[in-house]
Image 1: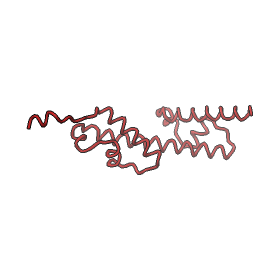
Image 2: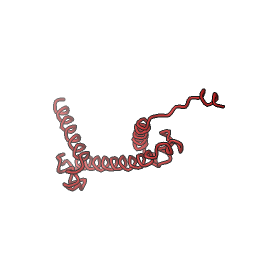
Image 3: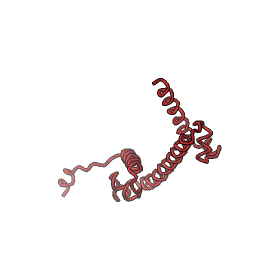
Image 4: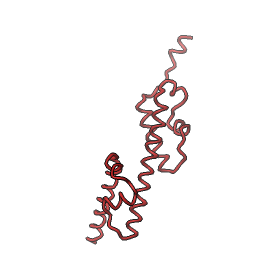
Length: 136
């Protein structure tokens, strides 16, 4: 019996590999607009009951990342809708016009670096697009 157990090799992934898989699966599911459920995320990333027993912190990690990426997706949608609305209304895209259209408070923008960087990137991209259109 011992020789049988010694000959079989089992492959266990590192917890960091599970975490990167979980992040990619969640991003992909949000991009494809699939329903984000713990069981589906765990199944697609290869996290089984055995893995959860071995690494119980993965359960909380999955739940926290699901909430985190859902919040980012909501922020992205809100900013994109505001930008489209401002462009249709022929209102210039400024940091404050986007922030006020999204109804973000100054505290939200100050505390959340993601919101600030997203708005800055949109303004920078819009300026690049305008300069390219003016050159043509």
